[in-house]
Image (cartoon, rainbow, N blue to C red; front, top):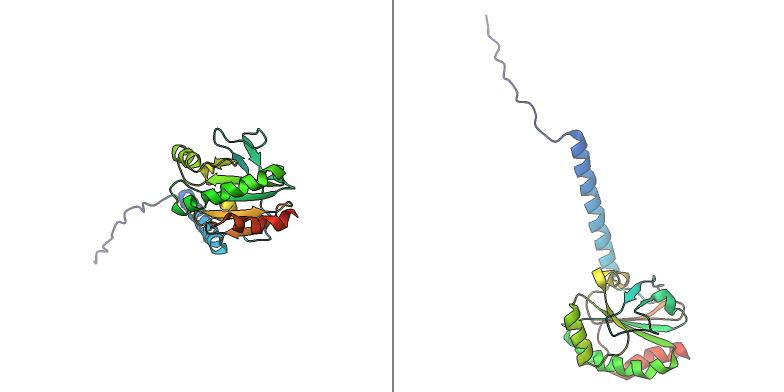
Length: 192
C-alpha cells in the first residue's frame, strides 16, 4: 500500500478583508491628494483675470486697517488691493521694502488703494523686527497655517499681486519691485 504524504498547511495569516479595504481607501486618498498637489503646482502662480477668493488676514499687533485688527478681502471690494508676500529672511524683500512703503504713503490718503503685507513662513519676532527696521506702516499680518498663500499658489517670496475693484487679479509679480514708479505704473491706470 502506498502511503499518501500529506503536508499540513499553516493557516494563512493576513489582514482581514475589512482592514485591506481600509488600507486601499487610504492609499487611494493619498494618491488623490498628491495628484491634486501636482496639478496645482503645474498651474503656477495665480494668473491675471482670475477672481481671487476671499480670505481673512489677521494683522500683527500694532497694525490696523480702519481701526480693525483683521480684514477680509471681500471687505475691500471697490478698492485696488496690492498684496505682497514677504519674509524677514528674504533678501529681495529687503530690497523692495522702501519702494512699497513709499508707494503706500502716496496712495493711502486717497482711500482708493489698500496694501496688505502677508508674512510667509516666518516667526512673529523676526517679522516685527523687519517691519520696524524698514518703517513699514501699511497693514501686515502672518499667513497663519499657510492658508492664504495657496490661494495665490505662490512659489516663493517676494511675490506681489494686484487685485482690481471687482476682485479680479490684474498683476502677479514674482520678483521684487525696483522702484516706486514701477508700482505706480501698475496702480495708476486702475484708479483713474
